[in-house]
Amino acid sequence: MTGSVGFGGMLSRLLAHRKLDAGVLAAAAGVPEPELAAVLGGAEPSASLMRGLAPALGLHTSDLFLIAGRRVPDDLATTGPKIPGISSLVWCMANVPEAGRRVHELVRDQPRQAHPEQASTPVYDKWFVPGFGATLLRLFGNRNMKSTDAVKALYLLARFGPWSASTLHMVGHRRKEVSADLVAACAVVLGIPPGDLAALAGVDVPDRPPYVDPATPETVELIWEARNLTGEQMRYLDDQSHVIRHEYDDVMPSHLVCHCSLFRGNRRPWHRPERP
Image 1 (cartoon, rainbow, N blue to C red):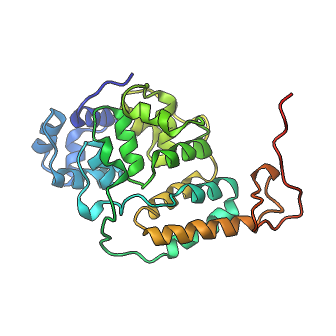
Image 2: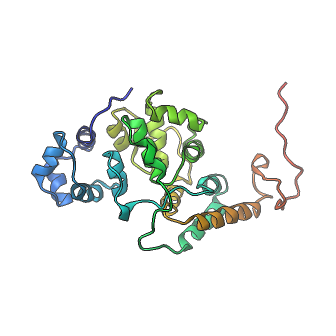
Image 3: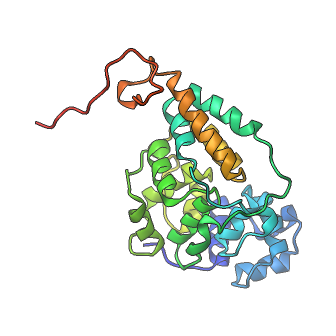
């Protein structure tokens, strides 16, 4: 099981994995090298340091705050969890890529507020507890992904599981191991290089995850772009994604077809075969 280390320890492992000198990173980030050295030695990082480090490391700045166990500043925070969540949009991207790309265009077309206000408590708020499992749940929460959204995405994009949300919670509470397979799958969904996330977690993962859905790169973009949409916008997108998927009823694999009132195909409803 991964050990619990501070942000300095995780950052040290990341630099070692990348074979990156602290002085070079400090220069690229525009931060004082002594301040970075102090953090690598166990000091608490300042907000200005993390704002400088994140782009130099190729990470979302809000992600780096959460990796460090710090609350995200208001100007970087999500607008909070939405009902419905992101799952239906991810499903379209993974199962009907043509429909998914149309949904993604709708996401991109949604107007954004310059500084959206948080409508509710962030999804990740309860996961400021020790352990890398909680770190993973904070990172999912930073994308407005509840545990149910996360486990669905892990299966759709990385063929990990299927897990229940409660199983993922066990990882967050350190009652289940943060395995290398879980870290590799999370890297796929979060859009973080597997080696980087593994270094932060203190586990070894293969250079390439066992499975990555072809639609993953665009899906990762969609998830991030949707994180600051309003609840009303997410309801609209959820409705539209369902309408759009039905335009592909005649070409979709039969076991994926939804036979609601919008069904447009000529097939008979699909039923799971009975077990012998």
